[in-house]
Length: 511
Image (cartoon, rainbow, N blue to C red; front, side, top):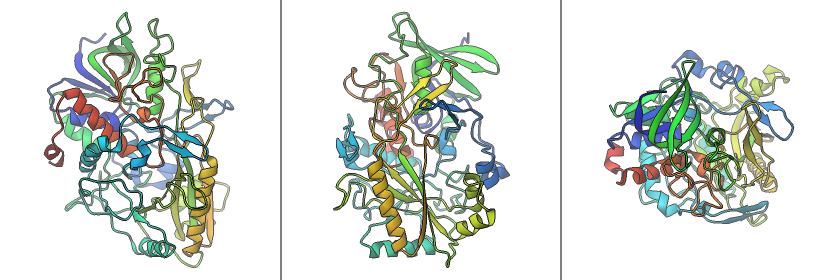
C-alpha cells in the first residue's frame, strides 16, 4: 500500500488524459498521472519504414482475441507517454454539426449526442490552439460554423496534390485543406518529411499529447508522472458509491494509491477492460455497469486504403496528407444516405507495401509507391450493443466486432475509385481493413442523461460512482466518419472546466 494520496488520479496520458493534465495543471490540485508505457525515444528508427511497419517496433507485444472466431490479432494501440497520438496522422478535424444529431443511414441509425455542436464549439477553438492546428475554412460544403478562424494557415499542397485538387474541382467536387497538427509555425520544427502519418516524429514537430500537453503540464509542481505503471483495478468504498484507490503494478510490485477523483483515459478498449476488471461485490458486472452497456457499442470506423496509380507519371510528393473530400459525407443524388470522408494519406513508401503485401515482388511494390496517390476512405461504424469488448477468462481482451453499414462504405469506395480514375489514375487498388485497424476505437462507455441507457453523464462522470470519470473516446455515442482526436480533446477541456468550476482562459492556451 502506498502512503501517497492525490486529489486527482488520471490513468492514461493520450489525447484525453494528456489534455486533462494540461488543463488542470494550475488548478491547485495534486495530480498523479499513471502511464503503462514510457517516453517514446527519439531515435533513428522513428523514421525507418522497416522498423515501424516491418518490425512493429512501437507496438506492444500483446494480442487480442477476435471473439467471432477465436483468432488472435495485434491491435493498433501504442503504450507511450502521449498514447496513440505519438504515431497518429495528426489530422484534427471537427465533427460536422449534424454528427451531433440523430442520423439515418442505409445500414441503421446513428443516435443523437447529449450535447450539441454549439456546446463543444468553444472547446474546439481551444483544442485547435493547443495543438497548433493548421487549416483553412470555407472550402468544405459540410463544414460546421466557426466563431473563429484556424490559429494557423493551412499546410500548403505540393504540386502533384495541387494538380489533383484542380482535377477534382473540375469534376464538381469540393476538396478542402485537411486540418493538420504539424508545427509549421514561424520557427517551427516541422521539416515536411515522408514519415509523419503512422510514424513517431523524431524532431517532435507533430502536435501530439506529449509535446502539446504533458511536457508543459509536468513543469507544474502539482503534477507527478508514473511511467511503466499499469493500472490493474479501481477500488471503491464498501457501498460502491465512491472510488477510493487504484491498484497498480509498478517495478514488479503491486501498489495501491488513493485519490479523491479518479479519471480513466486508457482508450475505449482498455478503459472498458479496466472497469470490467474492477468488479466487486458492490459491482459484480464491473464498475459503473448498472446499465449493462459497459464495453458495448464498440465502434472503429469502416476503413479502406486506396492506392491510385498512373504508370506513366511519378509522384514526387513528400508531405501528401493535405486534402480531403466530404462531398459524399451526407449522401448524393444516387445514394441519399451518409457515406463518409475521403482523405489523403501520408505518402506511401515501398517498405510499407512490402510489410502489408509480403507475397508480391518488392520491385513491383516500389514502382507502385513511386507512382501512387494514396487515400483513406472512411465511413461511419454504427453502434451495435453486440459489438463489444470483454474480459477473457485468462484476463485478456476479447473483441466482438461485426462490420455494419457496409453498403454505404462500398458506395463511397466506388465514388473514390471513380474520381481518381477521372483525375488520371487508371489503376486504383483498394483494401478494406478489419478488426485490427482500431486506431479510431470508441463507444464502450457512452455518455447520456439516462443512467439506464448510458454509462456516463454529459461530463463523463460515471452515473454509478460519485467521483469516477472516463475521458477518452469511450464516451462517444456514435463514431461519425471523421478522425476522433480533436473531439476527445475538446470534451476533455470541457470536463476540465467542469472539474475546476471555472473556464479555461483562451489567452492561457494561446500562450
